[in-house]
Image (cartoon, rainbow, N blue to C red):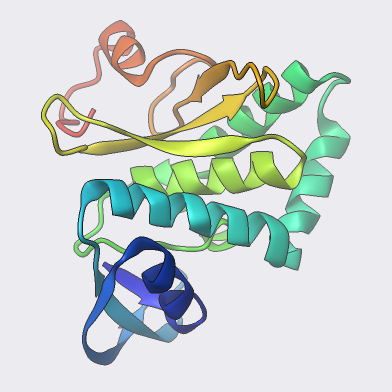
Length: 195
């Protein structure tokens, strides 16, 4: 797992992850060279916790993502449900699913700007966007075994005391609120063993 310098210590401290080896240079999806550390998470639960922490960091601390959130919100119809649906449609339309040779977490803004990412990148981007416009959101792992093979976003359309978690699958043409497995069956998506 590769993480950039500004995130590595914070994530390791909160998830129990540890840095593996010295930092290395890598080329991001946008073609720029960056310095990154390889990080090993102690469990899949810790990896999901790391994704959710990254979404929270991006939603609060990245002014570029906050500008995107303001722009997206300005085009949505009035109401919380309409805004949640519009954010989902925006990320689904902007980010094309692509696998990664090596698992890398991109920032939400970079995923939206480059327009490509795998399931955890698009789920984190959607969660960060939802959080930036005022929703509670989370990245959830899915898999038919004890090890998740897919990540998808969920938004809380209820309250903190009485949550109502709604799906936001972005890597296939899922409808807002549709479970990723149901969407895959409806669409007849082949070649995606992760869902």
